[in-house]
Length: 213
Image 1: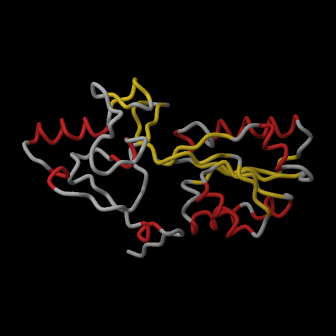
Image 2: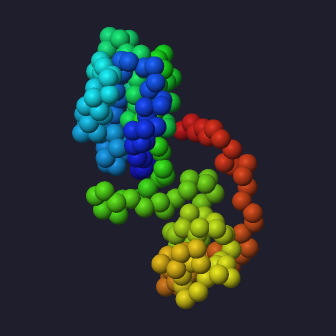
Image 3: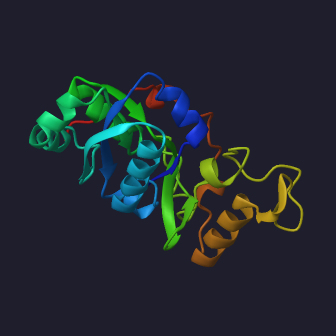
């Protein structure tokens, strides 16, 4: 899931300067799970906006605003309220902000910072395990991503700063490459240690990405 958090109120006030009426959009998927853009957060944002002299023409919590066509449909359902607003305040990830900008024809203000692709440890606790680099080594590393879990992004084993299985950047952090070695050893295979991983081909990750299935 995409992990996000609300921008500071101080930063939002800067972006809302000169905007008096707003339509709010939240996300019922990732942002709801992160408690950054679900119904409760949209309601609190409306209260804050009104306390700071803004008028809210309406709101909608969309099921995955990153879905461009679904966002267009929901915007049509609220067309009068959207047209009445100076701008749309979007409480979703950057992909959701883009969808709203593309289909609304209105100025959009993103209320959240998009942080990372996260695994859910438990309710309200998220961990970054994948960097979406486009060049997965997981089949050779026992399902552990060194590009993400190694702070240096090393692809050919631990650095010289590793000590007792801990990372030199944070002695509370387990070395990803020690974890990979232990996992592969338990599986009885050498995996990535049987070859030299070449430098990453950044051509595979040139933005913007596009995929048609």
